[in-house]
Image (cartoon, rainbow, N blue to C red; front, side):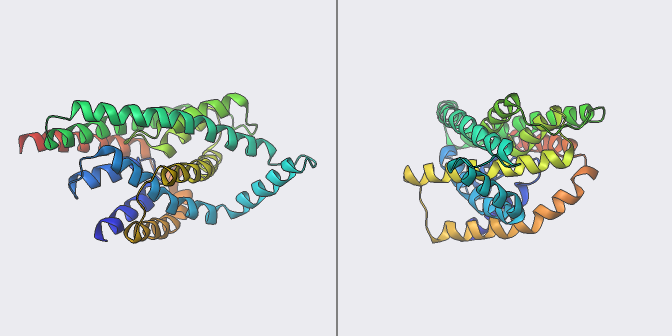
Length: 276
């Protein structure tokens, strides 16, 4: 149960900041609890997203309600509502990121097995080192996006290109260490959406893809027991407690630098584990 509570807390606190919650959970399962099966750790991380997905639904309940009403108008072919573009955007990004994520997840799992097949210790070093590199890449992209946003003119219209771009970015986030929120917020800022728009769209994007991903995991026989339920409850509790604070203070914090520092420390930890 302790492991589930710790992992749930990590998921709840890191989902909203631009640090990969998947990467942190894989790292915690590897370093703190001795798990070396990266595919299993990714599956656990994806399932824990369900708790923060519910937190996002609660926080954005008005947006979610309007989207459901808009979906009803589409099904019954009634008059177009104000959220039609957003609805198609979420459907499109979910389909694109879901397909890409499945391909990347399978390829990454096989690569780790080949590279780290010599011993459990080697596998741990490969996992930790890869997470560090991905974190640094995410931080660098966030810094670039923040600089470009300073001279940007905020925009409102969501285009087909936005849908494809954001779907691809969200798909890459299946790799441990690449932050889903970090990549999608970065892309939205580069597309000249302002900070609050970027956060809102990014967090709304997480709801359908997490729901679909958990359905796939359960259909494929992913383990679900009372212990994991504690993790889900913990991730929800920490998620709902931290999302408001992040939305309020995110503009005041240079998260890109923070992510890069975390990535560097992660790589140092991988190097030290080899020496020790």
